Amino acid sequence: MNAIVVIPARMQASRLPGKPLADIHGRPMIAHVIDRARKAEIGPVMVAAADPEIVAAARAAGAEAVLTDPALPSGSDRIMAALRTVDPAGAYDVVVNVQGDLPTIRPSAIRAALAPLANPSVDIATLVAAIERDEERVNPNVVKAILASNGRALYFTRATAPTGPGPLWHHIGLYAYRRAALERFVALPPSPLEQREKLEQLRALEDGMIIWAAIVDDVPLGVDAPDDLERARDLLNEKT
Image 1 (spheres, helix red, strand yellow):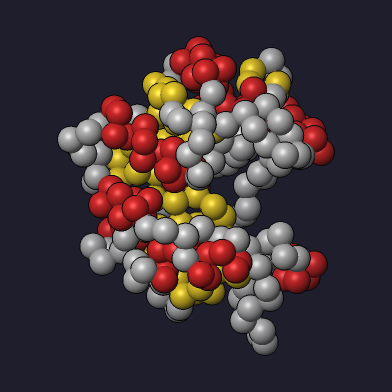
Image 2: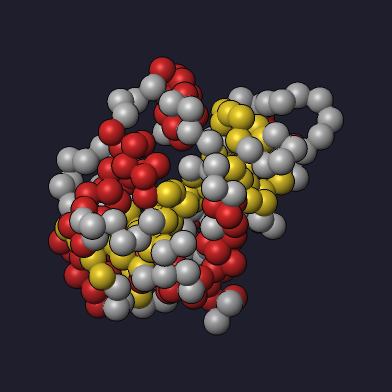
């Protein structure tokens, strides 16, 4: 595998506008995500940015950055657009999508996303962690992955599923795509289940793509609101 990590980022966010540049101990959040991606040591790190301010911040942090059309509908589309600019020949055959609002993600978790791709039948790999708290089992903001015993993803939902005893998996929105799978994915229209659940990965499942999940120990903090940003500052302060 010849992998590249691409971090999609944009300034517009309903709950925390400008969050890629939010200050965390004197550096923008995107710089911390770049640091984590570099420490994973799986390949070069690039930022697919919707805004020139993010391009400047990413380059100041030492990462390659590409300015993409701000009207693109998703991070996946933004990543594909950036790849077509810097790697039109497809030298990178695996693309790891690390969201730009995960400044505390463990590098080991990023590396773990590559493991399922050792199976040549897998199109897309992702991450899950066991749900331990009862309130998360019923929280619609916690996306659950329904997995077969071998790790193959059968479905993703915001509902509590499956019911009964056994593990329930918290889906973590980090993906490792085969380049061909990403090309195929972004060419598809939004699917009915994707639109019902508001979960982009269902588009891939409805089209017959195979998604497998690697299990990691915990769920990284996603920074979506000012309170999350304060938690990220506290967590990163504890690690320094």
